[in-house]
Length: 197
Image 1 (cartoon, helix red, strand yellow):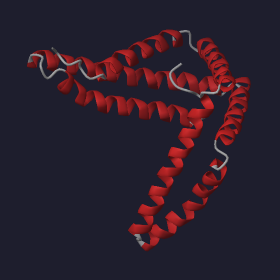
Image 2: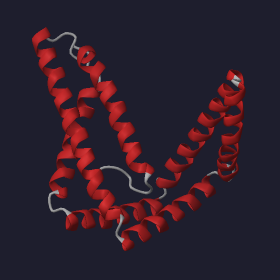
Image 3: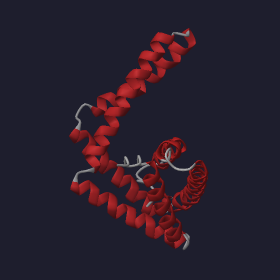
């Protein structure tokens, strides 16, 4: 499917991935095709920009269909169950994770207080701490998702979700296929050009 759909934030992660990919691709055509004729580089940049625009449009359409699919009681229950299983797996791979997440909640009040005092140093310290906790969370999530049992559960959920999306909108299969095709094209454009010999 388009993105891992474990929680409402997952599509946001896909959006972030799209933005990062887009930013890389804006710079990539000039660097990757520096030896090409200027007209070819301009055509290539325009083509990449068009692909990125189409990818964003597809993302929006798929997100709408996915939201409707996730509103289904069975799909929603399966998502909740999967989320709980992933959370347990994350806590097993990093037993300190829950303490760090609790710290994040406590930091909200500290951020508010530091903001009212206009304490830039404290805000920076809290920001750095939050980034560290986010890295810890993402690392634990990645390690949990790589476990065969969890990967199988995710794949099973993804299939259920895609079937529900197809039921709600027969065009979703075509949209997903085109989305993946464009992702592959954009990823290949983001790769640095091989040095010529």
